[in-house]
Amino acid sequence: QVQVAESGGGLAQAGDSLTLSCTISGLAFEDYAVGWFRQAPGKQREGISCIRQGGSTEYADSVKGRFTISQDNAKNTVYLEMNSLEPEDTAMYYCAADLLRSDYDPLYFGSFQYWGQGTQVTVSS
Image (cartoon, rainbow, N blue to C red):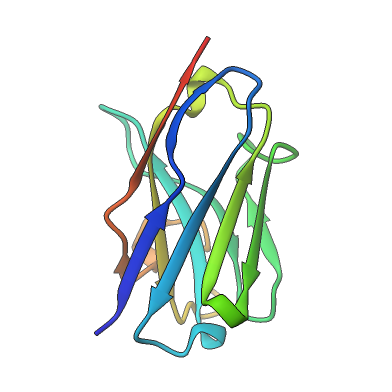
């Protein structure tokens, strides 16, 4: 059974940093791409970053230069380091995993099969 578990969310002030973790079990971790998504109330789920099999990364323009995705294969964990947080970053953050074919959009939520329950990030001004 595949399990995806996010952690590390919380309250932050504008300009602060937070690092989210996503630990995945029940699958061959190195064979899967892992994406980070977020959803604010009343808004569509937004893809913000992905790390593909092999380690290449993708970022949404809204977080490029501020967020960094990385992985630790020994821990089956993907991290999202978030710097220079803004109130607009407030959302529920989700991690997702998929075998992700090379022609699939890595920032589209429909490309991913396995999802975690999310972790809330709230940034105050």
